[in-house]
Image 1: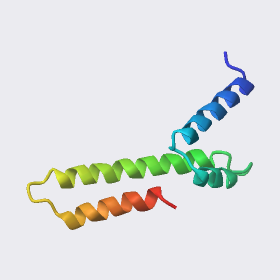
Image 2 (image 1 turned 90 degrees about the horizontal axis):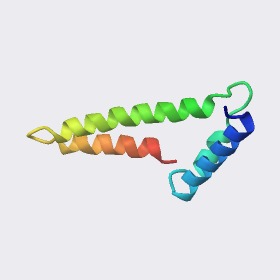
Image 3 (image 1 turned 135 degrees about the vertical axis):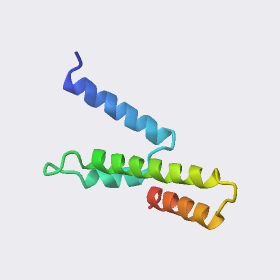
Image 4 (image 1 turned 120 degrees about the vertical axis):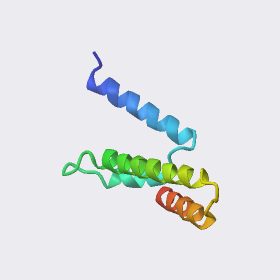
Length: 88
């Protein structure tokens, strides 16, 4: 069974590797700074909401691109929404 300190070390190593690979940036650090004792699950909740929304938008984009007559304004709106939610 893993001890708490070992799990914390593994999390730190994993987070570090995500920074090294470019998946995380300073915006993630800023998000972590907003978490406190009153809401210890803040980062998990925000990241989960982002992925749920991204999945929805990507599904809508895939459905739009699968149509015979592609509405490129709709494609642009989906791409813009995804870009907006994933940038600063």
